[in-house]
Length: 138
Image 1 (spheres, rainbow, N blue to C red):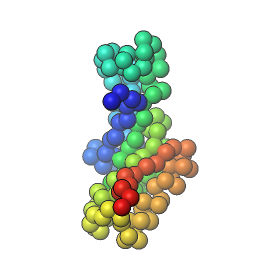
Image 2: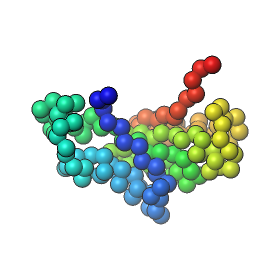
Image 3: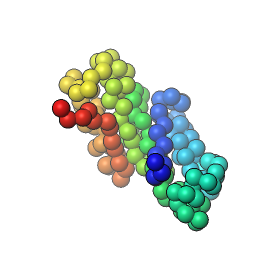
Image 4: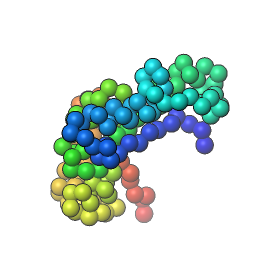
């Protein structure tokens, strides 16, 4: 299926002391020059975006930083402030595991639900989007 590319980048996977470095790496890897360093393979891009895709490609890419660890949670405001990041995606199960609460399709632990509730507020305050997976309705 062709569509707007979405790049997910686990913030903690490349976590360094300066919070914005791995998130800036996301922006660089997911964006074409002059914004980033992604190579341009024209066949898919031209099919998706038309003959002028290279001129507007960066406007169609969605860049989301994953929030999955206690460290991500502590720095969520900084992560959302990075220019070029469109939003965050909360990995509920990994976040629950990293908080020592296990996994659940419907988390009820107050620390986990509080963390999940905090992330969209941080994103909204920065003018960014937030999302997480949801289980199907029964």
